[in-house]
Figure 1 (cartoon, rainbow, N blue to C red):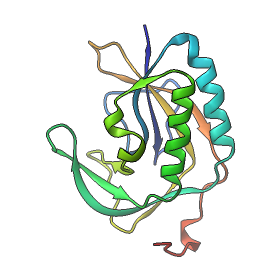
Figure 2: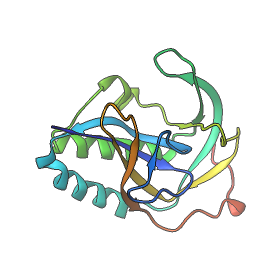
Figure 3: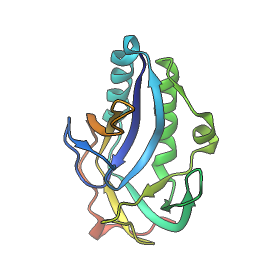
Amino acid sequence: MAAEKLIVATLDPVEVGQRFKKLPIHVTLMPWLNIDPRNEAEFDRYMNVIARKLYNIYVIGKDEAMFGPEYDTKVRLVAEGALRAVHFDILAAADWAEATYDESYVGENYIPHVSYTQEKRLAEDEIASVTAMQVTNRGRRQSKKKRGGEVYDFGEPLDTDNITKLY
């Protein structure tokens, strides 16, 4: 049975093995994908290579938008910057690992955004530091719970007090 994984960068830390019903505030880097367990180690190696080359990724809040099948999920679009390049690197890793995914949300269709929680939102023009990628594993279908998997750390967090707007 294929492993279901979601690759995100949370704006708050997530522990390996942490369980949650709803994801914390995050940027989706790669939507849900299915990987044959025989290819998970290869995918993990690719993800480590991607993370090692990243430093000081940040997101800048732009307009709000409505996402989801019913357009009922409010998100904050973010300046694309390095996020699009990271997405394409992860997409290549998924392809190398022979993963399957919904093509309507990847590649040229990828729209970088921050998914809100009830407790937290990213404001327009707000800058948030992203310091790691997290793999989220979907629990058994009947439970719908998600579990934090591997965490791939980048370089040092960005000092948002000393940054100039780049857009």
